[in-house]
Every structure is written in structure tokens, then in C-alpha cells.
Image (cartoon, rainbow, N blue to C red; front, side, top):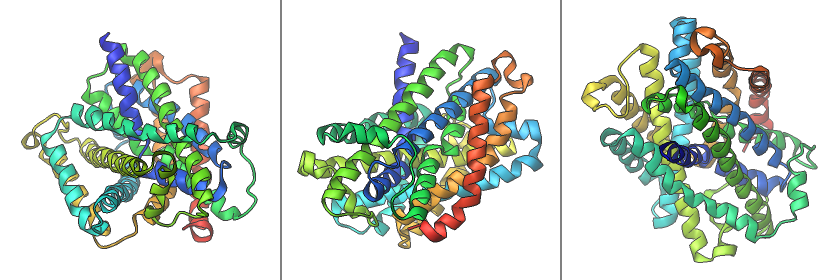
Length: 406
């Protein structure tokens, strides 16, 4: 029974980590611009993150190392510094976008401009990290994230042509705005295959003291949880394609357009549900990304770390998430458009994938760390595919940002 509870809570946790401002914004943009055509990108991203999350959990449970620990130990600090710096930079942009998402939700609820909410949001996140435990972050906030199921309910209520939805799961060439189409595909993949998610997951497994007995639960969490999160992202895309299209919105360039998606089905409560979904999903991701920054730095430099420790027992770890949160709030407080930052940061996230996934592949095939639980042919093929995809995305991201970005 205890393991079943761990699985169910893990599924909820993975939904909280999978669906955040990047997934919501990119899925809504894709639906408004291209209808159901980009569902394939959500499906592909979901499959990739299922494999990476399962591997991250398996690696942590068997080796008792996080991914960052393993890379630093296996390849040395000089090799580790490059993925560390790249991931810290990308995570910083993502964190700023997540704070912006919460601030936008607060503006929608109160009418007070989002700039004024950035620092209070950062302070509240810091307070929870400073006073809270890993269990609170992992399970408490993510349980509230179940409100995002309203997008799946709305998608079913709209009764789309399911044959057209299914056709959207098959890659096809766009009928217009080719550069923007591929830029959106890159952004969706970046939102789905976020390095912070599977690296945070490995740190969480160590925080929860996983061992080999959790390998079965880990597979269930990876498969069911990430599929559940991907389903919600598809729900956002379907609702955006039908509802925003009906309102003549062919491009989402303002967060104020997004609440329109749920109002036709739920009326005033649709507005409330959207604001709650945006606020809770983004705030949960804010906590996770801030923690992941602290995990990366502390593990990279060999400091004591752990969200369950008192700040006085891991001062360096606590200092990193404190400074990162408030620095990430500054661009939003100065008026940087959260939506544009979100789309751009998701594209850069996709481009940075090879820096973390390539060394991860070596770790998952190293007997010293995983022994008989090393990757099989299918898992290695999946990782190699993600690496190849990441190299392609790294090459095309900047040109697509110039010619197809928002």
C-alpha cells in the first residue's frame, strides 16, 4: 500500500513538474496558429521525457548519485563546468518566465500590473523554500496542480473532430508561416524535454532516499506521470485551436488573450480556472527550478545540500536559491514581456539538451554506477535520438528565433 501511495503521489508530482508556463504558452500558441498540426511535437516531447525521467530515477536509485554528481565524478569538474554553466543560464531564463507567469495570473486576478507582483512572488517562493520541506514542495503544491485538468475536460466538452486531432499526431508540413511553425515545434520540444525536470527528479529521488526497491515505482511515475502531463498539454492545444480560432485570434501575443480559452465552456469560472491553473503551475515550477539551481551548484562544488536540512546546515545551497529567485524576478519587475521570454527560453532549452544528455548517456552505460541496471538497446536508442534531436535544435534555434520567433 505504501508503494502504491508513492506511485500515486509521484504521478501528481510529475504533472506539477511537466505542465508549467512553457508548456501552457507554447501549446496555446501552437493551437492558435496551426490548429492541431503540432500535436505531434507534444507527443514526441512526452515520449522523450518519459525515457529521460525513467533513466534519471533509475540512475539515482541504483547509484545513489544525482545526475550532476555523476557527471562531475565521472568526467571531472573541468568537463562538468560547461553543462553546469549552460544549464544554469537556461534555468535562469526559465525561472524568470515562471515568475512572470505567476505575476501575470496575479494581474489577471487583481488588475494590478504584473511588474509589481514579480518581487512578492519571488519572496513567497523563497519563504516556502526557506521554511518548507521537500515533501511540501514535491507533493503539496503539485496536488493543487490537478486544477489544470480543466483543460482536458474543456477539450472533451468542445467535441473536436477526433480524426483531425489524431492526424495532428503525425508530423506534416505547414500550410503557412513555415519558419514560425518550426520555431513553435522547437519551443514545444524545449518545454517538454526540460533538463531541469529530469535533473530535479534525480535530486528528488536522493532526497526521498530511493533504493533499488523503487525501480518499479519509478517506471510507473515516468510512464503514467509524464503521459498525464502530456495529455494536459494536448488539451491546452486543442482548446486553443478551437476557441481562439473562433474568436479570430490567430496569434497569441498577450497573456490576456489566454483566459478566453475556458470561458465558453465554464463561463466566469473558466476565467477563475485559467488564473488558478496558470498561478499554481507556474508557482510550482518556480519552486522546482529555483531548487534545481541550488542542487546544481551545490552538487557541482561538493557542498552539503538538501531541502529537508535547515538553512544553517547548508548555507551555500540556501544562498543559491535565495539569490537566484530575486535576480530572476528583476527582469519581470522591469517590465520584460513574460510571454516572449517564455517562448524564447523554451527554444534555448531545446538547444541546450546535448550538453546534459550526452554525458548522461555514458553514465547510464557505466557498470560502476548502474551495474546490471544499465541501459538496454531501446533506452540507448531513445537517448541517442534525443541527442541527435538536440544537436539539430541547437543548429536551427537561433535562425528560427530571427525568422520565426515572436
